[in-house]
Image (tube, rainbow, N blue to C red; front, side, top):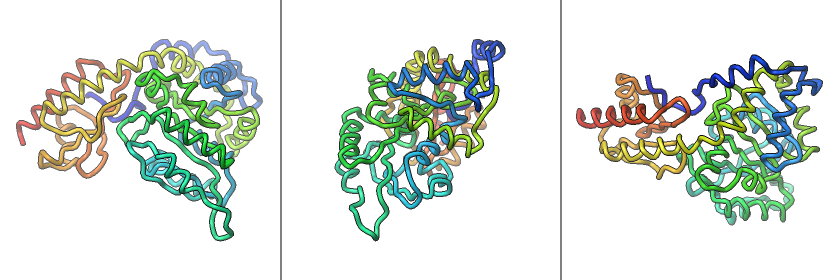
Length: 341
């Protein structure tokens, strides 16, 4: 079975398993786990922020950020297909009591002028704009890298309006690998940032949120309120450190495999929804006269796991546990399916 559903399906490496076994641990709610402390300090340094906090997932990290930045009754601005809006169970409304105001973007990138136009004026009838949220890379835009210039312009206008900016950087290291722009430079364009350690970086569990010391102090309380205060968590922070410092350097391999798969999709006679920039390939089967659901069945019958991404769309994600031979086999399956249509 070749599993291309997501980079979340990666298994921890042998080095990660050994690091977990040997990790020095303590009670992290008391801030006494030395392995977690080292991870948070390293992440803060890499992201150019004063402090960082280890959380259980990217969703929890994003929700803690929204809870810390906003007040109930406010509104947050985000791209219309952002992960926080699309895949997090309306948690921003359920937990933070804020409403989303979505903005149509170009491959996940909101035009700064559109963002500024959406900022609410002072009016008793209107909610206050409490937060602007960015996502890089952008999942539903096919792993697109949001341009640094766009992020910078958005952050500058946010500062002018005294509105904080949070960056959902779940795959921010993929953006770095694709663009050559450091994660620190991207993170400079936001007050806070979340990075996921269990996607392309391959850790078994966990994400990081980073920001000012004052922000992280309040975020730590929100983590506790959400049940995210953990105890001897060094056993998962140790493999997370390997993900952060070592696995982040190999993402170019995933991008190369994705590019090869994209070429194979077109060679097989199917279409690409978007140009491939990182490790996500979105295939459109409409022109082949079948549905996404039917394509999913045919792929499964041939030992390929993927994700239906729309009525005629199928998403493939390359990762550490997929090699070049797997990509070759997947391309051959696609060709065989096309020949049978």
